[in-house]
Image 1 (cartoon, rainbow, N blue to C red):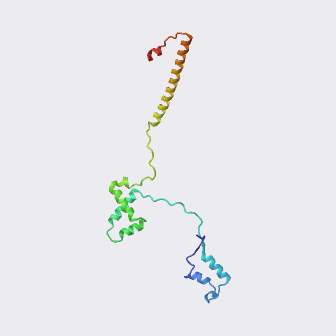
Image 2: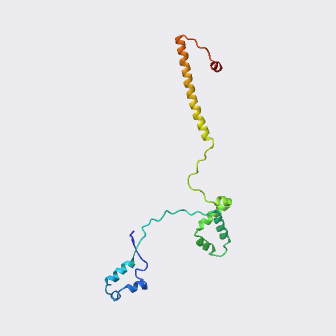
Image 3: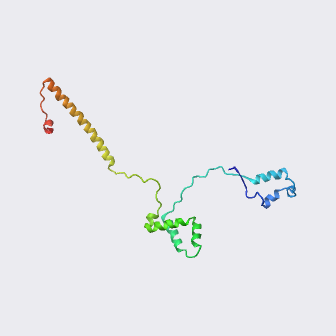
Length: 175
């Protein structure tokens, strides 16, 4: 696409302002003078806006607005009234059909806009506590295995050296 676009005043149907800019020689079949040609070029070309338009967004309608429009649409009894309402509000007939289904399904709750995208993950409030306790439990089990290993080594060393170990109070309880 070119940066230059023709203005509505150019072309075969010139307006009175541009017709006044034409030279007499152009009207009589001759070529226009240099000033007239330059003014026609300036009036003929308009530079397009280089600004990028922002991204289009979906329209969102409140439940109250949907109910109001449905009430107005239901009150339309003359031919063309519903079309006039849709044009005035900038809506399509499919909007009315969808909104009617939503109204029948459950009024204000189903008429309110739904959030798009993935549903948020529902987390259990006790999940963090459970993971912390499981981590602590596994750590304690590792320490217990290490302590049992040390106790077994001490028993074997005492047997090798011939030293008799006195049973402790904790050992009597676990045996």
